[in-house]
Image (cartoon, rainbow, N blue to C red; front, side):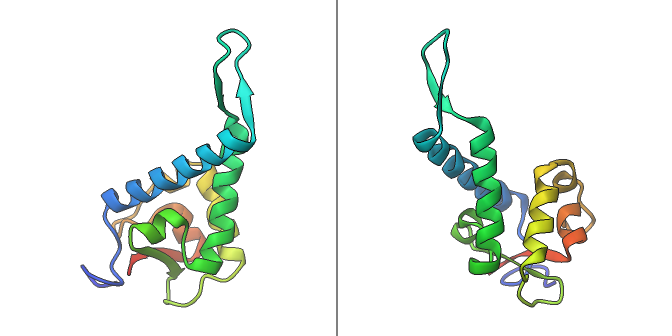
Length: 127
């Protein structure tokens, strides 16, 4: 991977921004369609299970079709196989299941690739 520019591995700020966009979008959809009412306070909030399932579904659906989640694409990133090809259908599923476990996503190597990407054979790149 090049050290900078298109095809390089994005820095942490872009990744966090993309994650925030994807989580906020999933939460808004869950709030709109799967609200939960707190019996004590009467406060309405998004069902956390629905929010997480929406987030994971977006990852699985958009990675093979758009090359990344809406947050990734908004921040100028895409997910490809390590050799640069299309991610295919099974890699996004494996990557997303590992992402749901959280721990593989926060364990990085020297190239800033998360364990979930290494196992799935994918890499998040700029461009």
